[in-house]
Length: 364
Ligand code: F6P
Image (cartoon, rainbow, N blue to C red; front, side, top):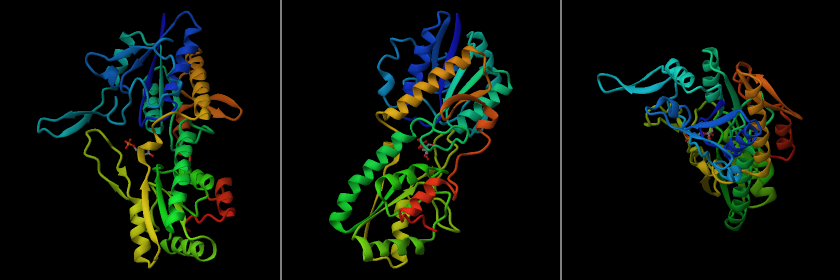
């Protein structure tokens, strides 16, 4: 019997369960494969005792439309930076990757399928370089991985954010207000830009284009004067003003390396007031609502395709690679290539031109 181990790492994302189900269904068509899931990314292997679950067709039945991941996830620590307390009681990290690989060998794991974003795939590459038979499956609601045309979860996030704009429009119009909708997008503004176009926003601010508050103010005043008496601004959590920085806080969670973003919508209101903008303003921060719940059909289909392809790569020994959607095919790209550069919005991108063509102010 051969064994594949599924790991879900990083922030959760609608469609993770659909990938897990697809891997298990595809594996069950072979008579000589068993699939296990490690609880909470690689923690399940690193913990003593090990925490893994057997994933069979019964276990994954009906999970394709469930948000989250049935085997849990984490975006803290990991095999290369396992948090431990030193002799003075301060937190530090140790590299437990060799020990983890030995444990996987003792468990007779033939292939690891790591479903995760760029942080997780960097871990995959490092483990591959140490000899582990590993395959990556791209996951990110931010759509910031460059070696695949799409990642599951992104369309669901855009759908949720667009529905939020649709709701805000009616209250904004009733009160003649400007609404700032803050959406996820740490380094990449794809959720914001797609939401702004789909929802008909007047302004869209993204991390790739630092904004000029005077330009934002002018666009909003034009809207009130020439068009209608309300407006919607869609802003990525990672957006920032020219010459300024992102609004963030340090996390006190052990092993959490990211800064916690959030608050740019509020800051925009303050900056606009300081600049003399006189209309009423309110903010809505969507936060993790974008990551939870039922994946839209597109994401389920993509997740199913990634899962089937990932298992077939495992069967064929195609390790050190990540599944990638290169329209119209599903291909295997080297992990090294997959993590080389992020997928950020470029000024010449078609969607930027579309947004400008629609009259959306991008803050510059
Ligand atoms: O990378 C995906 C993402 O949703 C970012 O857009 C966001 O900044 C981050 O995760 C939030 O992560 P957490 O769940 O750790 O707060």
